[in-house]
Image (cartoon, rainbow, N blue to C red; front, top):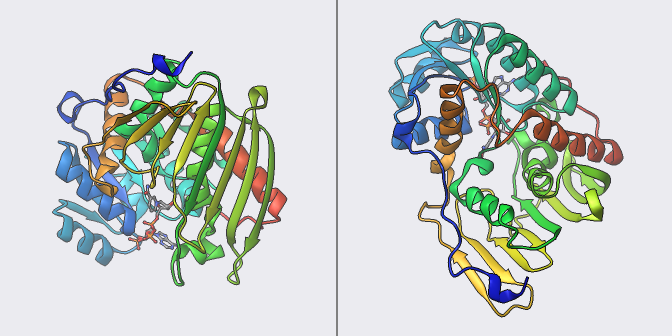
Length: 348
Ligand SMILES: NC(=O)c1ccc[n+]([C@@H]2O[C@H](COP(=O)([O-])OP(=O)(O)OC[C@H]3O[C@@H](n4cnc5c(N)ncnc54)[C@H](OP(=O)(O)O)[C@@H]3O)[C@@H](O)[C@H]2O)c1
């Protein structure tokens, strides 16, 4: 393929419209940072109903419900998953509690959307998806990037072979955090890897397939969590990804998927709404898809629409983010964890 075969425009995204999917009744477990943004995004951009919230304390549940206009507030996870007027539970607790929260919801017969990472390792991911499958309920990791319109443009560019033979992924995710943020706390499975690194490893395994080899180096923080990790992955056919995550410094957070004919770049933050730029390998042509959505967590609703679409179609997992892909990603993180000598936090 020559640079002349790049189209004049990139294909537009094919995401479902909010009105084309069933309006589910959501229960939210956890009242923290992401829970409030997820609820605000659903309420602003969809006809999904946020019906209930669950917290460790009744007071926190009631405060969250009052602020967000949610009808029912539950003072325990058990009460939330037992709410007969909840169809799907969104697990928005710290990583080490995803497994217990998800299994509780699944056992109660609820569909689940579990924040990323779905579990702290591949074994937990497998356990959760197997339980959901056995219970006949839908289960998905809330890796929201994969459901953004931006990523559907990328999906189509890759599917059309516009990049040629895809050989390389480069991605970084660096944000600076200070205590007492949970990311610095080993007791809640903190560290850059599971919070930020999972975005870059997901992009790499999504574009190039499971890793066949993983090499990592990194450093710990004084609080005892992974501060930063540099990761070199090999994929089928010796394709390569070069990845980095850090909680110590702010880095460009950009993503690149490069092929023999063209290079696709996702200007940072690559995991949020933003443009898609495809440049021919000789640099002579460049085509850009411009994202109309603002950068930010207002776009979280796209993952909820994917849940509603799949449940409406009677699916138990999303074809856009199946359990096999989730587990392939967590196997990479498991191996990085092993090589860096990170002690896994106990899970509940
Ligand atoms: N998609 C994204 O962009 C994104 C962004 C940030 C975080 N996340 C993910 O979302 C999850 C939650 O992150 P967050 O930043 O929202 O955390 P957070 O602000 O600390 O909130 C977590 C909530 O979980 C509940 N919880 C239950 N047991 C807890 C415990 N032992 N310690 C602390 N909280 C506990 C708390 O609610 P109650 O007190 O009401 O029980 C708390 O407010 C993480 O897994 C993270 O990876 C995703």
